[in-house]
Amino acid sequence: MKKGLVSMLLLFVLLVTNAQNKEPFPFWNEVQKFKAADSAAFPASNQILLIGSSSFTLWKDVQDYFPDRKILNRAFGGSTLADVIRYRYDVVFPYQPKQIVIYCGENDFASSDTVTVELVVQRFTTLFNFIRAKYKTVPVAYVSMKPSPSRLHLLEKYKEGNKRIQAFLSTKPNTKFVDVYSAMLTASGEPMPDIFKEDSLHMNAKGYAIWKTKLEKVLLK
Image 1 (cartoon, rainbow, N blue to C red):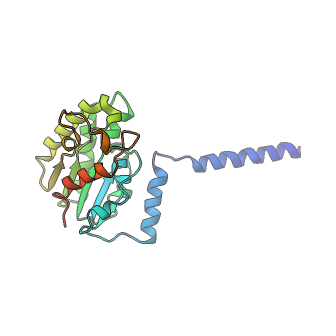
Image 2: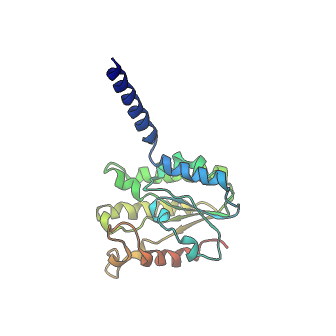
Image 3: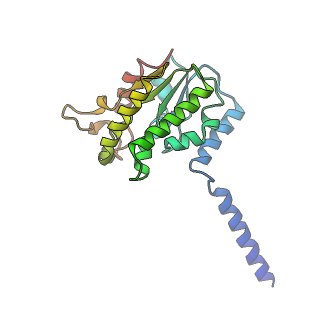
């Protein structure tokens, strides 16, 4: 009887532990870390807010690239536009940014073959409208989806998605479209192989140097 009770208790502890470790939504734990950091020391207002996926997340030294700007990075994991929409109250709305810069969309296509250009543009439009409802005049910039060598099968979707998002933003005031896609191609139109890490997805310092050149003209001082 005692052995049976002990076994039941052990099972209960195991189930509780698993429940605690399991995220209710993707990237939940990463977002909670942002919230904890904000609780400890809330970020100053009037910064450039970076949101989106890992190309921003992994740009750990982004402040060093733009020493004359104040940057708050709230990009997380391999997020999709849908993820950023889900966590907008945690990673976008709490702050008083000078400018909002978005890099996201690439993972939406990579998440499923059924994801269409129309769906990604719709998600971007939804995110933009949420942002504009909260921040009516804050400038918004979108960094185009990049030509990742590991995702050659998606490049046509990236190009079309970039084109449609650029067209959408061209009708909206206080917006910028930052074309990094073209700047990351060789003369023959192939993705530059030496600007990516070994995974052929994330960028190395050479890749971020290209982004710096493009963003230097857009980020507010």
